[in-house]
Image (tube, rainbow, N blue to C red):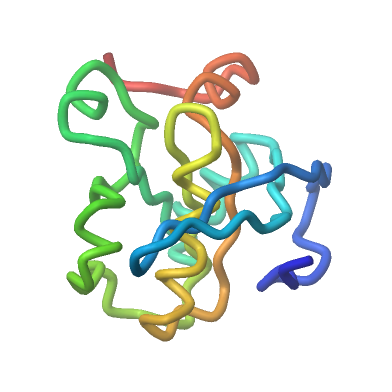
Length: 136
């Protein structure tokens, strides 16, 4: 089992999920921790500059709608080694995609870039269902 980068994040409900890490010429299935959090508390952390929300979906998905206040950076760019344009590596990075798979994969690559506080919060659909603000 992959060890979670943040131990006991605030107001979190832990769910286990299978995710494919996609790197090199093979696929490896790993169990990862996905934290489904209260959108208002995450936004409070963003407002206080304690966290950032990273959308790792495609640009087309982003244009159809995204979390209000999120930063977009496609998972394909991350997997190809492009540096995520977040300069403070001490900040908490909350990742999301459509349903959580790509967002959990992004954790591995963010860790490789030196980010120590990364949490997958699942998907855009979960965020909307919990009443989180979106831009559509």
